[in-house]
Length: 115
Length: 120
Image: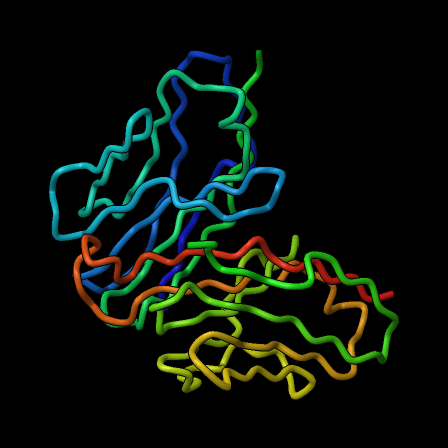
């Protein structure tokens, strides 16, 4: 079974600064997908960024980027130029390619952006 | 598209009552998932459907929980009888079926806004 670990329950950052959220996972699979979802106080789960494991190039989406280290089974999220609206719970998630789109989530990291 | 639509947004009920949560997936999405979120257990998959057929219900906690998908545009999650430990946020999510690349939309789950259930 796959496990996803987010070792930082809470983090805070000053507005306009950069923050990195950590995620590690454990799997014996070679083909899989990784995701970061954001859950603001509205509780809506919003996709932030996604990565296909066969791609060595790290995914980027505007101010969000990942550092994907396949050998280390690490998938960290970097948020640049943090904004107040980035305050949310962030979940790292794993999907085995043959799992029928099932997601396994980490415990989450509560990020607070301070003015 | 209006996204994945869940109802009710909030439900408060008393122990022993029947609870029905509803979900309308995005049109054209033929995989549908029910997740439960609690402080203690985080986000856990309860059941998922492909083309209206339940594929894996191993996450359903016990016989008090049941889920149906009578057609491609509607699913229900029912708890009967409800207990205080069922209090949680229940999410429905959908995605196009398939193992294609992200560019096809496959394997990217879109979540509804969730239904917060409180059982007193």
